[in-house]
Length: 373
Image (tube, rainbow, N blue to C red; front, side, top):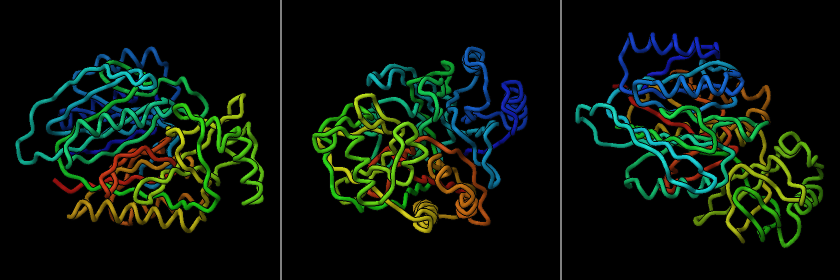
């Protein structure tokens, strides 16, 4: 159903050569194209290139690619899709617009009517949760979702969404694939701080916690509870062990990663907050993070309910930055020793959990298990 091909070169010329080889070998009905933001491709040239695609295409540019138990900061990972494929793209996600088109490939052979939706969104869009809610409302109860946030950690304006209308920013693409898969998601973080209320928010920015500037409250709590200091100008580097967590109904926690501060003392995060939601500062240990990786793999394989032939993973870039050399252990656990695994390091992860909810996660591992043909 989805067959991976990888090339370590990040040029458009090498991608074109790879796509020609794929077309010659298997004539796919559609393509999922995942690249690295450090490929340093010319955006206008890439925009024209993807507009000329003759089959439905969707994908994005991410911080890194995972392939053969290695992390690659340049290259292309392409999945050849066979069977029915629908591609929808949405622009102006931050303004909660719903414009776009749908393209369908030829029909499948009718052996399966299960639907999988691969969702890739610009991680810096400010209405991702709202977009996902609408996407969830348009799906059936049996639809499985997975995907993640594309883009750069250092730029909020990078064009990072790939579709038949080119290379876009502040956009999302949804691929509707006929077939079966199992989804597992886990993060390993726990709430250990006093509870806080987000008393002023807008999109992915928390302006106030407990009616005070969010950055001030956040820094004070980390100093008091964890005896650590953060640098407001380097939150990605100094606050990586202290993400925020939103408590959902049923007790689950959704992680939100602070990545920048505003001039007014707000915290800019990956993912949205509701006004007056309750949040915590989270903590974890390396063994807990690695145990969560094993849990995500086991969930996906159990959810599939049959032998797993290959896996696709969306693993958070902040886990990679936090784990450093120990991320090799995470890669080994994802591979499981016998099942080939590929995917990306993303800025936020998308998955439908076992309790049926569709969420945009941070600092999380989302694993998708696929059966053989």
